[in-house]
Length: 198
Image (cartoon, rainbow, N blue to C red; front, top):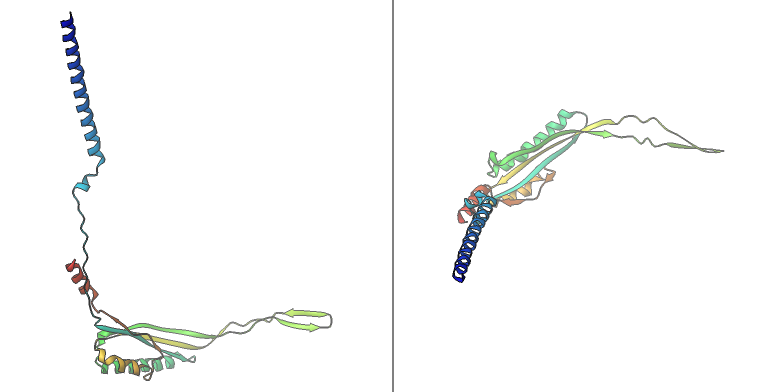
């Protein structure tokens, strides 16, 4: 009887062990499937690379803008003619210094009216019994003239000419001159070289 019991216990243990192995294997499969579904498939197919490239470039162009502002009376044509003559004289001088047409670009051209406004404040009248105020009718503003503004952007490639050009601008009639800045004419080439270095 003990032998039969030992056999029954052994068989029972084998069954329990087999069930435990099957349960563990099944749990592992369920876990693996859930894990694989939770991961984004594209993350296995992509990679990322970071690089840095540095290129030093010397500016090859000096840029500035200049303008001519002309205030005229009600005769717009006369003011415009005067403004255009000054602009053309300055541009002619700049071209004489070796600056090409492609490096001179018009930035702005405007014609704006100038107005005369009237003081329409209330008038106070003092009388023996106190003061009263009377409002005067206010006329609309009158156009008294026009302001013509032209400006151009200039690129100078010969740095030895910059001083001469900048020094003569106001003498030739420019009454608005921006500061001079140095830049690279074709930054895309420098950026491409930096990408190659990276």
